[in-house]
Length: 453
Image (tube, rainbow, N blue to C red; front, top):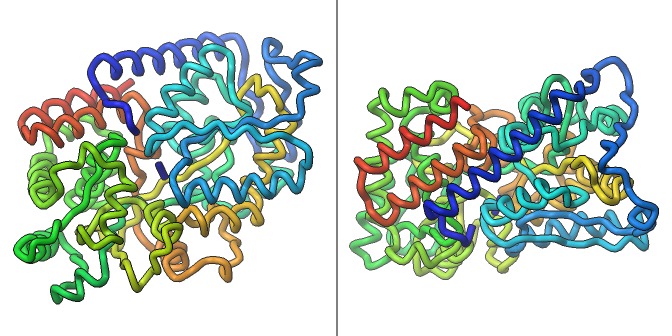
C-alpha cells in the first residue's frame, strides 16, 4: 500500500495541470506512432526505445538500476529490500538506486514522478497501481513500453488472474508487472482491549456503532485514524461506500458519475462517515496511517481501518497476529474484497533498460513474490505461490480473494483516473476538518466530472 503534503487548492491545481500536460504530451506522441500488435499470436519482439530515449555510450556503460517508489515504512521497505536482494543475486555488481519518496499511498511520490517523466528524466522502473492510475496516467500518454514479450517469455499470463491482467493491459498489450494484491477493506483491532471489554469485532455498521459506544464509555479511543498522509480519511470513506452500496453498485459510482448527485445512498455514506469520525481521535491530521496503526498495537486505541499493509507494519514491529491484534473485514463488507495491486513497468527512455527488464522479471517471478509479499503484508499476484511461506492472515487473504466479490479501490488507483483521485481526496480531507456534509457532497459531485474525461 503507502501522503505528507496538504491537498491544498494551489497544489491540487498544479498537480492536475501536470497530469493533464503529461496526458497531452502522450496524445501528441500517440498520434504519430501506432501501438504494437496485440498479444496472443506468439512471442512479441522486445520493444525498442523511442529514438529520443536512446542511451549514450556513457549512460549505457553505467551499471545501475534506479527504482522509484514510496515504500519507506516498516514492512513495505522490508519487502522492497527482499526484491533487491534477489536482483543482486541475478545481476551482481549492479548499483541499485532506491529512489523512494515518503508519503502513504504515493501522494508525494506521484507529484515528483510527473515532474520527472514530463522532463524526460524517467527512473528505470517505478511503482504504480494497476488500473486507471497506470493506464489513464501513463499508458494513454504514451510514456510506457508494452511488455508483451516478457509476459510471453515468463508465462505470467498463465499464472495471474484475469481480473488483474485486465487492469494492466490496454488495447491488447501489457504495460506493467503486478507484484502483489492488497485488500484495503480491513479492520484491525487490539485483542486485549476487546477482551477486557467483552467485545467482538463488528460485522455490520450498526455493530460498529454499538462497539464504539462501549469503548468510548470505557475511556478508550474506539477508532484510530490518520490524516497526515492525506489518504486515510478518503480510504475510510471508500470502505464505507462499499458497505452502503455493495460491490456492484459501488463500482458503478466510477462508471456512472451522475450517481454521485442522484443516488441518496451517497448522503447515507457521508452521514455514516461523519458518525465514524465522531468516534475517532481528533488529532488525526498529525498522524500518518502508521502512527494510527501503532496506537492499536499499543492499546491506546481499539481499532483502525486500513489496508493490509498495516499487517506488514504490525509484524515488523513484533506484534503477533492473533495475540496482540486481530482482523476482520471492515464493517458491512464481509464477503467483499476491495482490491488494489502494486506493479512496476518499463518507462520509455529508461536509462538502464536491460537492468530494468531483469528487475521486472524478479517482480513477476514466484521467487520474488514469495520473498516480497510476506513482509509487505500482501498476497502474491501469481496464483501458484508457495503457501508454506505465508502465515495465517495471508493464507486467509489468498483464499478470500478467490471467493469474495471483488471491488476496485479508488484511493489506490484501481477504479478511477488520477485527476479524479486528487479531487476525491481533497473533498474528504476538507471534510475531515470541517465536518460539513453539504460541502463535501458538493465537492464529490464536482469531482465526479473528472470521471467523464
